[in-house]
Length: 82
Length: 82
Image 1: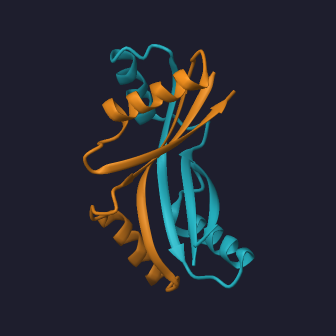
Image 2: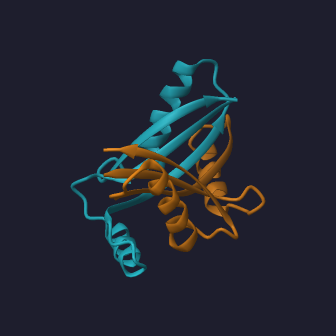
Image 3: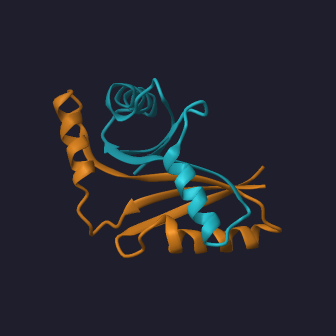
């Protein structure tokens, strides 16, 4: 069994209003030293695969077909064998 | 400058309907080997701090005051010096 830990963020060139709102809220709470906040998704996907190579290929395929929007989002992932 | 990479997930005991919906969608796309999907938030927060210890304390405080809901969510984070 493999667990893919996938982090998805908007591309740097895409405005992140949610991150901006949280940055402002942190400032209001007294954390004036915060300079940037980006907010995205975090997914954990558990699945069976014969090898790490197969597992990696499947994570890429699932990410590009369903889990992320490649036009505006970037993703990275780690694979953990369980 | 420090960058906190914060992952937030619903606690194991809390139903995750969004994860369930994505798990079903992956099944419909032919990924029948997927056994579990959990979906949460991923945040990157950049800020100044004098030491790693101070930075860690601030990330915990911000997470518990604003960034997460400790009643239903768990979080983990890594700190990267930039």
